[in-house]
Length: 156
Image (tube, rainbow, N blue to C red; front, side, top):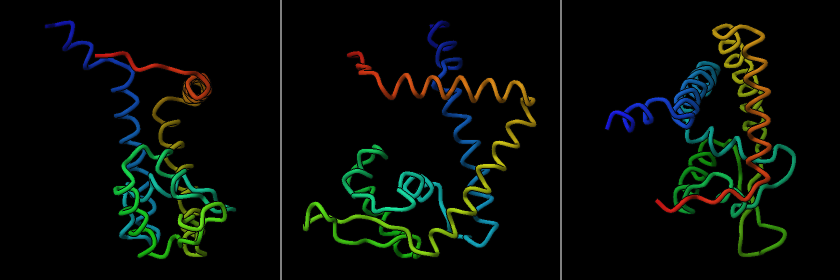
């Protein structure tokens, strides 16, 4: 039992998850304090997956976010309500919708870019410049390796 407890507290997924929570708190708070008071982490998850310059197909967004179509639709509708994005007909499938940023949404993304810089600055301050640079490089390598492999989920 002790091994399970230790593993649950020290596995890489937990560290990545907890640090991601911290990262999102910093970015969302920054966005909220810069004119987007109602902005949420859920909206961050959606908007962060959209192409800034061209339409993103709704079906593509669903696969990127990893949520159900209904959950993504609800969050997209909330983003539309706040005028961050708008839905347009999909060029490839007349029954489907694509998503594009509005001018208000693009302004939000500029604030989001500032919030990313702030979050990275905070992490850099906590870790030190060299450790932060090394961690970022290692995470980029892990990301690239996992993005291009066919990792099977073991049957548990």
